[in-house]
Image 1 (cartoon, rainbow, N blue to C red):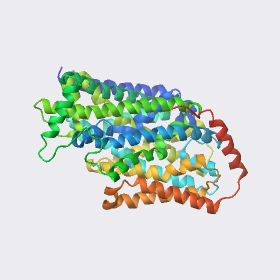
Image 2: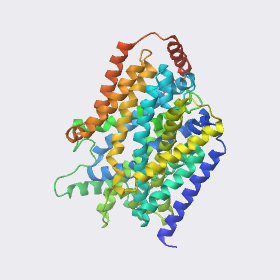
Image 3: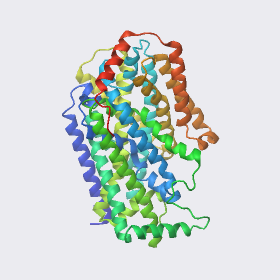
Image 4: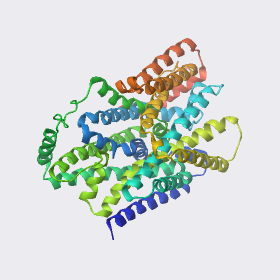
Amino acid sequence: MSDTTFQLLAVGLYFAAMIGIGFYAYRKTSNLDDYMLAGRDLKPSVAAISAGASDMSGWLLMGLPGAIYLMGLVEAWIAIGLTVGAWLNWKFVAPRLRSYTEISNNSITVPSFLENRFKDKTRILRIAAGVIILLFFTFYVSSGMVAGGKFFEASFGVPYFWGMVLVAGVTLLYTIFGGFLGASLTDMAQGLLMLAALIAVPVVAVISIGGVGEVINHINLADAADPANELHRTSLIYGGTALGIISACAWGLGYFGQPHIIVRFMALRSPQDAKAGRRIGISWMILTAAGAISTALVGIAWFNKYPETLDDPETVFLRMSQILFHPFVAGLVLAAVLAAIMSTISSQLIVCSSALVEDLYGIMGRKTSDRTNVSLGRVGVLIVALVAGILALDPSSSILELVAFAWAGFGAAFGPVIILALYWKKFTSWGALAAMVSGAVTVFIWGSNDALSSTLYEIFPGFIIATVLGVVVSLLTTKHHPVIDREFAEMKRHAAGETSGI
């Protein structure tokens, strides 16, 4: 058997496993709560690892190692910011959001929670939030499909279109049947595969090179051989600026407003599960980020020691796996990259479906059966996938910058709203609307200006402006609402069990 055959066999087994998990989840899905939120019965381990896998995407296995390979550890500040942001999200948002969404009319989506939290009779909040989610995530899903197409084109020579269709089709198959539970279980399996690959590659490479000392020696030799300047790729500050480091760390602010991540908090069995989820999730993030960073640094040493050429730094993880492992094992590593791509697509498809069915169609007030609601959810997934697929037909439509732009948009539009809604009783619906709109608009204006966006990541000013306007408008429009006061107090009591520990 050829190397390519072994690798295709490994990828094929991975696809079969994901579809199998999807059909397992299908048998456990009977109503819309099950389809959109797994019946609020998600174990903390599943919630934590699936949240990490759906967040990181191919950036963790290709983008981050490639950036560090080129510029050094100064590029690791994004990973540091994301890890801190994720810890804060699990610590301060998860238990209260899990409590509040159940107490406030059993809200199963972020837009429905905002409407129920503020007792908004106008439905403006819910519609605005649903439209923002649908718009950004459709393009986000499309970029994932493009990444899948390019992956098969680069790895196996499969035409871009058919690679994109294959990745989209398999992801759609297990998502459309398994719903949120299917997406979460497959994301967990994919997260574990990513973790195993990111640990195995640098460990085996260090042993092959001759130990940590030899790795450091060859990194220093590679830096010294740079014709322009010594790069000092083992320094966290060399080559960076204060604003650049702030911008990188500011990625962590985005966690508070990412619908496909915080929906995991809503699906937990209880607020108390947030503590275990935090410890599992942050451990996974630290280990995978360390693996990605180590892969880049070991890659620098490897390609300095051995006379091989690395044409694209973003493929350092893939090239190292192909060099170090048997073709079948290398195929499993390729599957880990696919896992990173597909886990993000599946989670975003479910959130888009919920925005389309529950938050836009659902506000019409029509009463339908559980079977009909689940069918509508599946139709929603299919519609979003088809639109995203059409956008992905052109490889240049991937617009990777849009991923960072969408992350900033969600973080600035929803982050301050979620935090204030959970921690400030006097926060009003008009304050929430002002924060949501101003955050999104600031990100759009700032991100569209090359001079501004190259100086400071747009999520930072967007988050600050949204928070300030949300507070000011709420102070101007505040009024006593006994139901909101009662639910807020009940939420605090219900979430109080998760108050201490790391």
